[in-house]
Image 1 (tube, rainbow, N blue to C red):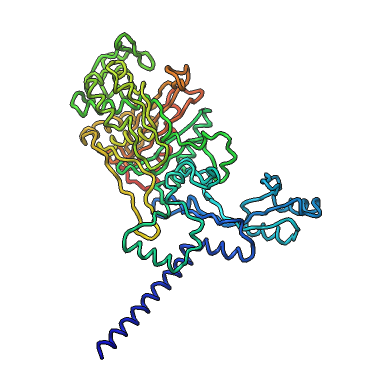
Image 2: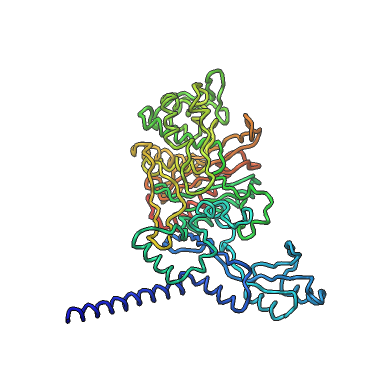
Length: 562
């Protein structure tokens, strides 16, 4: 009898405990998880809803201290619907309404005027007019608090046919995670809680959640501001850049100018503005390639920084004469001089010491010609088959100094990171974490795809590139007293789109660098397409690179290394 009594008491305690868990979970669910939804529902007690409520998961930037900053959210507000056919005194109504809202709006199929995205204050003013034929309805929409910041990464939510869906960027790539079923708001709350609890226990995720980006908003802002300035200064066609942690592949900033504001994407008639050239466009990378060519030969023990050769100002390869950029002959020079002075004949010399087959192997091993698998849509692989599948030495000779093949900026950033991180090809990524509903959050881990260089090789090449920055780049005017910086510039002729050959007088400027040179925290890659009034990247991109690098070292409080 006593055992039965104890069992009943335990059973009562269990149900009290279960009720408490359910109640606390329910309160958290209402007050935190679904706060915006219930706020919207409260508004509907006073204002009719404009059809089905739109819902979608949030996207966040991540500050350096781990704080999450909203990048894309659902915003609640109102719309005014004006039916001119019902309004009795149209002139009077127009005078009153025009003092509150802009009436220059498009009419829908029923000839009604709809003014979207109004706040509560404006909505109440319109309601107080009590004009017959003017209604105020509640609505929800996708909102990007930082406007155009990282728009090329974020994308936007727009109509595909009759359906609102993610278009471009993260919104598209993670649409299945971010999208919500409109009918989900009608689910029984108690059943929903039990489903969530079951998901946590079983690990069976619903696949729905929020996205936390690796993008650091202040770093992104610094990159975008510098790109905007250089774009305008040289009246260029496009400026793009990536800031990456070379040791992890984590992308702290990615941008291209011109860009767009996802809150008003419909104002852009040219759809190409929405694409991300960092992953969707390929470019000949120019003389920054010499760094990787030298690294491959050093890795095979074929050369050192002190290896010397005779520079005649040109080299003949299979009947084709390849000149230095300035057509000057420098005589007996070292491989360090090849990087310092960006000597084309030196790159060809290095390639020949390595051999065509080995050079091809390194090109492929650096990741050129393959997708990086960055977590963004529409990535294209680089175009290197004309080099890697050709028996002709001329193709390898031009490739050694960065011409004759084309790759995406994200491929470049990934390849050059191997010089900065000890020789590993890391997968670049822009999502830090997926906060899944009803299960454990998914944290994205760094992924090393393969080893491409020996650690000793990267140390030697980093020393050479630090010398380039300290002494050769514009005669060393940007040398930093307390930090070592490894860097190299590149200038390639602009390819004629859709054809073979180059555009006369048109160039693509490239610049990559990392700091501190021997324990790199950041790698920055910059690209400037068809700048006007400046021929070489050293003059166009050195200043923005240095500005960004100084900002990073200061912002992250990196200790001096010299």
